[in-house]
Image (tube, rainbow, N blue to C red; front, side, top):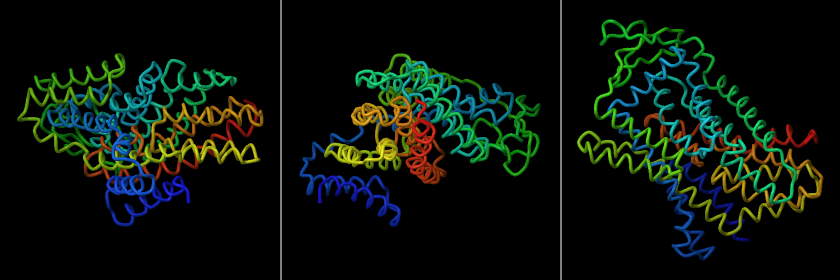
Length: 444
């Protein structure tokens, strides 16, 4: 039995053991990486640690620590109030505002994880305050990032178009972007109604604070340090915002830090993890007493889970499991089936690894197949990019992990399970739909 097959069996066992024994999957994945890497593959510890996602670790720790500080001192409450006033109290519009803003950020060149890192904590805190399903908010933010992420000046778009051009294949950058945007927009409409959007259409919050600033008006309950209300989910309601949190020195300083994070990560292209961790550390140094407890609010179980699984998958990539699967496609004699399998591999690998890396690796693997002319090259490339990017909602990808980490602690496990179910289903559903839309008709 080859080491590639052993690594695939190991991944299946990791999921089964973690599920059946209720053990942190990341810890089991580290065990698997150690056993298979040391005794089967014969890799050194340095080789195994080379697959540890240090960048993802710093992103998760830095972003969750920074926003734990912002939540603790009331900065998030202030931002939520501003958001409610911007949409004139129409709660149903907020997830769509998050979708559009995130898509605009990636559309003009921001990396997808960077844009999600900025928007997810704000969106998920808003969702917790107003009882919006965190799956609805999180998926619209991720879909928005992907929708804009394939513009000709974006990271995903630039990588895909560059690889296609170097491979001597026909390309259509505008159609690639447009197809991705429409696909993710339609998927978001489905998400909206699947995860409680219809109920949100009946809810509105009055944006004027009540005269008695400490009291709530209507059938609402108090929600959080900023006094913002939470709408009841059982009935249509119009609530009234309590007196908004003011910008004191700590909140103004934290807001400045968030602006620096946005500018530094999106415009100056600094590493999101290092920058957010640095800003959070500065805030801790300035106000050690008020930020001391925030260290414990970092999503440490999520960090262990994600880093463990990604380390194991990195080992699989290193020993050639992905190439092993790709080579198997070459023996398939049915063109449409081969196209589906390529998209399936892209989706499965991207759900656990970097979408950027997958786009750069899988398109060249598909080049010999595409040069045969058995399927349309442009349609196949669009289908492959759709299948490989829509699974960013998996909690093992950076975007999905940020949504899990940004969710309220008491809901984090539930959000993880639902995102895993959604992400794993997308591994199969996305390739089927993408091939049906872009490959099967033969018009591209």
